[in-house]
Length: 117
Image 1 (tube, rainbow, N blue to C red):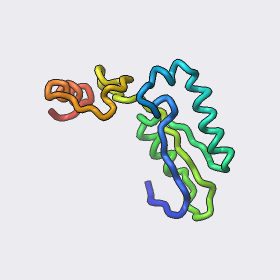
Image 2 (cartoon, rainbow, N blue to C red):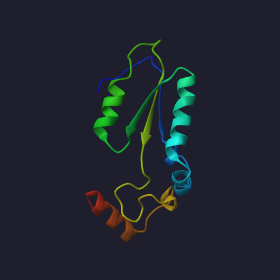
Image 3 (cartoon, rainbow, N blue to C red):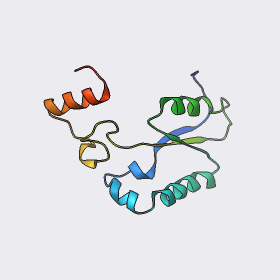
Image 4 (cartoon, rainbow, N blue to C red):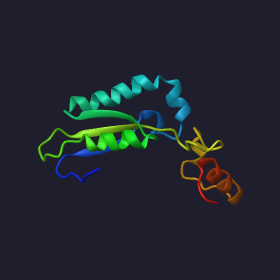
């Protein structure tokens, strides 16, 4: 991935993760909420790119596709993510958004993510 200058770029979460109440968002038609958010950026002339925020290849491809021109159309990359992805007791729960695990929980999380303990 090369460095780019000049073009406005924003990266944001999808509406389903933009709250500490993910269940509320999921139950109230996240597709509709996502389209409204995308539509707002499109209405202001932004290029909207939606990706899986857990897929490094998609992230790199989206960043590489941003124009390298100062007057290019601004781009927002909306990353669909799940809080706590990959950790069984954290995934999809808001309580871990800003919370720290205890030592045993940390060891479990690192093991589930394939990290060093």
